[in-house]
Structure formats: C-alpha cells, structure tokens
Amino acid sequence: MKILIKFNNNFIQFYDYNDFKIDELSRTNILDLNEIVLSDSFIDENYDFIFNYIKNKIIKDNINKVYLDKANINKTVFKLIYNITHLNYIYINEKKKIDIEIFKYILDNKNIKVIDCYDINEITFERLNLSRKVKILTRKKYCSDTYIYRLNNINTYSDIYYKKEITIDKLLQKKDLNTLEEFIKINKYIKTIYLKYFNKDNINYILNIIKKYNKKHIRIEIIENDSNIKSILNNMSLIKKKNKKIIKKNNINLKIKYEDKYIRNNIFKELNLNLIKIVLLSIVLITLLIYTLLYFINKNKTEETKKTTEEINNIIDSIEVSEPITPNEPEIKEEPVEVNSDIKTKKPKQKSAYFKNYTKAIKELKKINKDTVGWLTINNSTINYPIVQAKNNDKYLEYSFDGTKNPNGWIFMDYRNNPKDLDKNTVIYGHSGNYYVMFGSLYKVLNKNWYTNKNNQIITFNTENKNIKWQIFSIYTIPVTNDYMVTKFTSDESYTNFLNKMKGRSKYNFNVSVTKDDKILTLSTCYKNSKNRLVIHAKMIK
Image 1 (tube, rainbow, N blue to C red):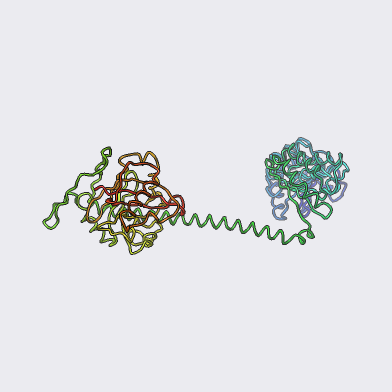
Image 2: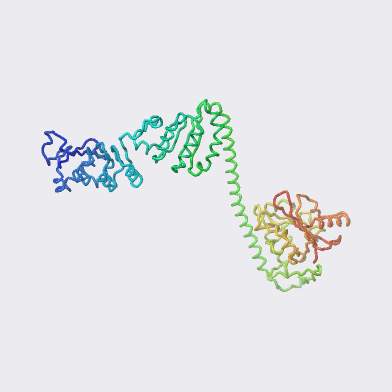
C-alpha cells in the first residue's frame, strides 16, 4: 500500500495514494519538503529514518494535528506518529464510525487529547472521555429536531455531551421534557440552566431529572421579567421547600436573576438589606477578633500573675520556719482554737513562715510591695495569697502585687479597714473572672460537698500582728449591694442587727453563734456577671 503524506499549515495529512491520479506523485519513495509518497514496505525497512524526518518536520513547522482521510489507513501510519508528543489532535475525514482498531490505537496513545470524527460508539465515547480525558468531537447529526436542541444549537452527540449551559424560554411540553431528560442523561458538563420562562412544574421536573441521574453542582438561574416576577416571588420558597433534599444533596444553586429595571426600582431596598448583612457580619467578626485578642491578653496576664505568686512563695519558703527567737523578738505562743466542739481543724501540711514567723514574712513581702497587710488561705481552693491595701478600692482592681497593670488585679482589703487592730467587719475583695487566680476558685464554696466539710469552714487570715483563724457562718449570692460592706457601727444594736441579717442570708445553717463582741471577716467577689456578688462571712476564733 502506498501512502501520501502532506505537511500543510498545522496538519500532517495522510491519504491513500491510490485515490490520487496526479503525475507529480506517480513515483514512489521520493521525498520533498511538503509531500511524500511512501510504500508501507519502504517505511518498515527505513522506519528510523522516516520517523526522524517526520518528527523534525513536525517540530520545525510547529504541527500538532493529524489529518486522516480514511480511518483504515495502514496501521504503519499510527506507528509513525505514536511517539511524537507534539501531535495531540486527530481529525478523521471518513464518514463512518471509528472501528475497534482505531479505538485501541487512540487508547494506547497517551499524547492524543482531541479526536474529531464523523461518528463513534457511545460506549467508546464514554471510555475515552472518562478514562483518558480525550475530548471527542462528532459530526454526524444525532439530535431530533426539537425545540430545546434548536434553541441551544445542539446537533451532534458531542454537542449534547459537552454542553455547559442551556436556555429554556417557554413552557415545556411532553416532547420537550423527554428531550431535556435525554440531554441531562447524556451530558457530563452542564453547569447552568437558564429559565427565561418561569413555571414551577417545569422546575420541579428539572430537579427530579437531576436527582434521577445524580447530577451535581448545577446552577438553575431564573430570569425575572415584568410578567413573571410576582409568580416567581410567590412560588420560589415553596419550590425550595419541596425540593430541599435534592437541592442540598446535589448542591443545586437555585437563583433569581433580576432584570435591570427591577434592580433600579429596588436598589435601595437591596442596598439596605445588604448593608445590614455586611454590618452584622462585621460586628460578628470584630466581636470574635476582640474576644480572641482578650483571651490571649488574659492568658498572658494570668501567666504573669502565676509567676508573681511563684516568686512570693519562693520568698516565703526561703524564711526558716524554726528560726530561733531573739531577745528583741518575743515568742508568740499559739492558743487553742475556740470553735464548736464538733469542728476539728487541721494544721496545714506545708511549712510556711506564716505559721511561726509571720512578722518576718510580711517584712520581706513589704520589700516588694509596701501595701502588704496579711495573708489569706482557704482550704480546697487556689486561694493562698498575700493581701494588700491601698488608699482606695480601685487600684488593685487593675494592678498586680508587683505593681504591673493586670486585669486579674490582686486580692485587697477595704481601704477603710484598720489592718493592725481589725474592725468589727474587715472586708476583702478580689476578681473572680479567671478560675486559675485570685478569687477565681471561690465559686467552689457554693457546692454542698465543700461547705458541709468541717475542715473547709475554717479560714486562715494572718496579719502582721497575729495568726488568726476564722469560722464561716454565712455564704450567699446576692444582686449588687453595699450593705454587707459596712466596716464601722454606731452602736452594738446596729452591729447585732447587721450580723443577724448577714447570717439570715446564708444558703446553709452553719450553727455558728455570732454576737456583738465578735469581729468578722467578709470576702466579696463577682458571681457569674457584674450584677451579682458571692459573699462569705466568718467570725474570728483565734
């Protein structure tokens, strides 16, 4: 068999030489620049030479397409072009289906990206397109002469298969619906369906076809006009509700596209709605940003507070508990704790200077902060801190023991109290917003397991002058008030009334007697929010 090879623009063309009756091509095995006539036997005998010549010519002329006049041209042709990576497009001129031999060749040739042929078996079409990602262009008229195909210029099987968008501009009849189903069944690339005519039954039918053939990520765009806007607005929510599962599962975007006239008439309404959405979204984002920022700031400040507490404890631990008593420092004997007979207190296990040498301990702490007035410890909590006192009740809401600004603040005594002799009511405050520091763990006292434990009912508050234990007689929460913060009283009667009132608020009856001769300690902190307070009252017992 003789083959005519032509180089023409961006094509290399192959013909059956027997179909040509041209004198110039009467001779065989003659080469020129643009036309070659070769026998298949000559090609086989001189394959490397012919292959390299064709390859160099293709590269030089920047050719990427192959033209086959007939699909059944000698298989030697396919052997020649098999390894030429530049060739990725095959055009087969013959008006018949691609046979199985051609199909096998194309399937094996990894360079081929596009096949332009007259016709191809549908199964072959699918396999080449899906497994090899080869695009198949067919020329044989496939489609029936129907409204949808005419409107969207769809004529061949490949037109149906690759169409990315279609338009529908009238009410669909039964024949049209069948055509639409055929289209959706075959098509693999549809992205948008434009509906210029609104009909809810048509939309429901389209959605059901989409579900039937499991098509996903399709946008159904309803084009609004003056004649259908009312119907669209009245029915859209019903359509979406009815097809909710299909729309969600198949990720269908059902949207109205408004005409310019409608947009102009409703521009301010839309702008206002969008503006509200933007403002709300901005508020949410800013709020999240602020909360995130505050979280990290608070976390950092909490670590600073813990570090300050650790430094304080190191100072306390450095003071020898059993330091000898000097002549100028008289021994202070501990007296028995006067409590109800059924309450037993435990000696703290830790060795702290506060139990033997508190005067020296406070003296050391005052080198760090001259406002130090005592030390507070509450069992089964994280509260074990030195207490400070300023000239007002604002400073230690924002400042730490070491004088640095810190939202956790510090635990402090009311500025009106006498830290040496102690008043009838000594009030101590602290923040509760952070569970890890200050009065953050004080909420535990509201648990029944905590306040019914006898050991927890004794608070230790030492001053520069003496070690003191205090017995809890009242625990409660209350809306913000300052009636429990009174530090001095005009008469024994007013003080007795005050004690009875505080005791009466308690959520638990501690069976502790409190009289006009007692001094009490009051602890106050926020509870849940700034509008409520958690309060503890305890009387001096040592």
